[in-house]
Amino acid sequence: MTEMKIALLHYSAPPVIGGVESVIEQQARLFAGAGYDVRVVAGRGQVFDRRVPFVSIPLIDSRHSRVLDVKAELDQGKVPAAFDYLVKDISQKLRSAVEGVDVLIAHNVASLHKNLALTVALKTLSAEKGFARLILWNHDLAWTSDRYKHEVHPGYPWDLLRTAWPGVQLVVTSRQRQEQLAELMAIPLDQATIIPNGIAPAQFLKLGRIALGLVEQLDLWAQSPILLLPVRLTKRKNIELALRILAALRKSMPWATLVITGPLGAHNPDNQAYFEQLKQIRAAENLETSAHFLAELVDGYIPDETIADMYRLADALLIPSREEGFGLPMLEAGMEGLPIFCADIRPLRELGGEQAHYFSPDADPQQVADLIREVLVPSSTYNMRIRVRQKYTWDKVFTEHIVPLLVEKK
Image 1 (cartoon, helix red, strand yellow):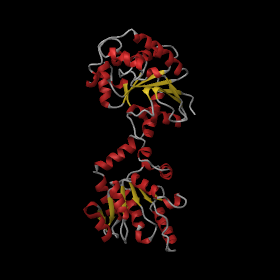
Image 2 (cartoon, helix red, strand yellow):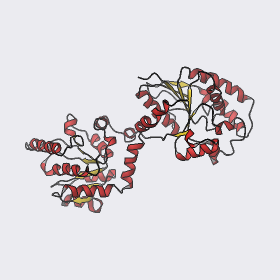
Image 3 (tube, helix red, strand yellow):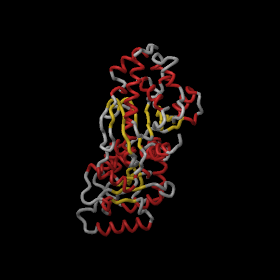
């Protein structure tokens, strides 16, 4: 548990829907999960996680009536008398809301003109002794956007949106934003740190409890490609070939993983002996950490919902069967948009047509591994999936970018 106290500041917060609001939600959950004392300060919103207090300051809402009245005149280039009173009121409430906070992360407050009284208040407070270390997280820039060119004007307070404030850290979300901000403020590029937004893959894919547990237990986000074999453990499924294909594939794709979802076949007592044989092959090929039988990991029946989750997680379907009556996994993979690598037997050929990649049930495992690699390596779809998993999950962004930012000196 860290003793650092963090506040996230924006005009609004979840359940208000928006890109920045979504980022705040993810950041707050990550901070809380890592043991930080984190709160959200916003004009609109409510508690979205019991670990994260929500501090409401209605006057910092970009849609508050006083804010809108002032903004109507500011947009015309006039600073109304009511502006200073609004700044004073916001300053008092904001100072109280972040008392004792070590780091205040303000999203868009110093780069957009949606509530310039809040911008001025924050700038003034940031210079006070003992005020929180301030990180200005700039998603959007009013001064570089054609949408806002008639709403920003030379002079105070608009110039605060294009001025580097003393003693604060600047964050942008992309290289383009970094270049725009550096030019706008006449500062070196590296004075603004690029921290991308991320994706919460389990949330996006709507993974269920069992699948989530498997992802964490097997560290599946770090594996690629993930090959799915959704079959029962029976000899006709030719699973031993799948294991040997995986072993061959890992020579060139060392993070390749195979997930076999099915239980033992229900009607043949020899299936237990077959399972033992498969485990012996797994050990002989050094695949204990890369070939996963869900029958070993999940007690009892695996729900259809979890199997569907596995399709969403997988990068390709592998079906080396010697015999099939139909081949339903082919259709399921088709619906999920997975590349299909399967045995060239008549039922599977009828289903897959020209859209699947075929091999003999007696194929040399290395030849099949080469086929898989030749299909996946140049695939833009596959490579984008891996790029997101490796670089753009919120867990990765938090660990590799946000946490290091917190320990940087002001």
